[in-house]
Length: 116
Image (cartoon, rainbow, N blue to C red; front, side):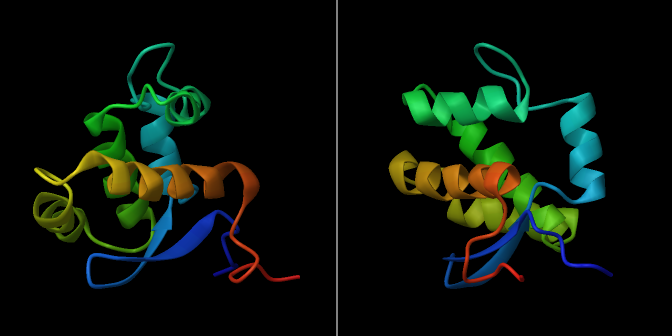
């Protein structure tokens, strides 16, 4: 399987996890349901919410959960991680992770993970 240039490995939740919003299944979910919120449900609208500081906890949860699934976790595994490490936790650290996951969708993997 070719490298997906939208994947990013992030140290989070006592380990390093792969997140990928560009995975075909996740891309399909984003195309159908999107990331609902003010000013639209597209990934670009969600990224703008993070950039503007108008994101919600739902934005963080959804981006992290979909990113985990795209990175290879099963839906139950991703839900368990979100339940334990996202829900009920301070929002600012979650927003940083979600912003990084969304960023990879737009600008690609970090230079550490990118291949020439």
